[in-house]
Length: 86
Picture 1 (tube, one colour):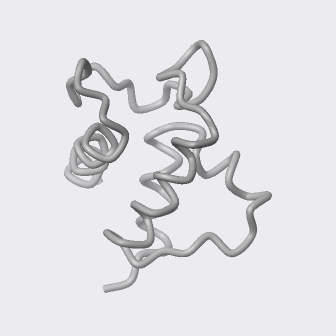
Picture 2 (cartoon, rainbow, N blue to C red):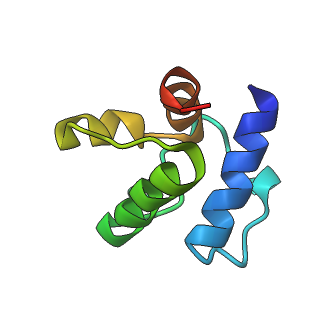
């Protein structure tokens, strides 16, 4: 699980062009969206959706689940673990 979190953080930095941030600076439980966390927005959410599809073979079927899934690195990692395709 820790390896997946590290991989996910690196993928987020690359996909979202977060060049000023290192994986170690992204807290596992911190919000990804809003002023308290990384400050991501709806465009970033679309990039994360594409990342999940391309890298892990995951499609989010119910958009209303997105807020809970995308809350933090912890919630994203758990969702990937439960839903990724081999």
